[in-house]
Image (cartoon, rainbow, N blue to C red):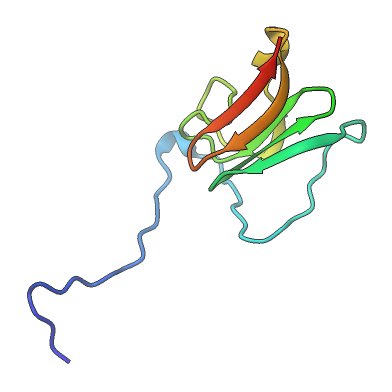
Length: 112
C-alpha cells in the first residue's frame, strides 16, 4: 500500500535522559510493594504520571519518582526510586494535610 505525502508515520518517541538525569528511575505500570520506615502511618497517597507522594498521620510529606521539574519538592530536579521526606515543610513548621499529584506538579495543603 502506498502512502501520500500528507500521511505521517507514527513512531514511538522515548525521552532520552539529560546528562543531569544520570540516575536510573524504575517506572512501573503495575503495583509494587514499597518499603517505608515501620513507624510511618500513611494517611493520604497520590500518584502523578511519573511520581508519587504520601502524607503521614504525623503530617510529613514523602515523595519519589521522576523529579525533572522539581515536583518532588526537594529543591532540586533529582529523581529517586526511594521515598524521601520533604524537609522544607518540617523546617517551616508546616504540617501536610492533603496531597494531589498532577502530571508534572505536586499540590500540598498544609497547616501551620
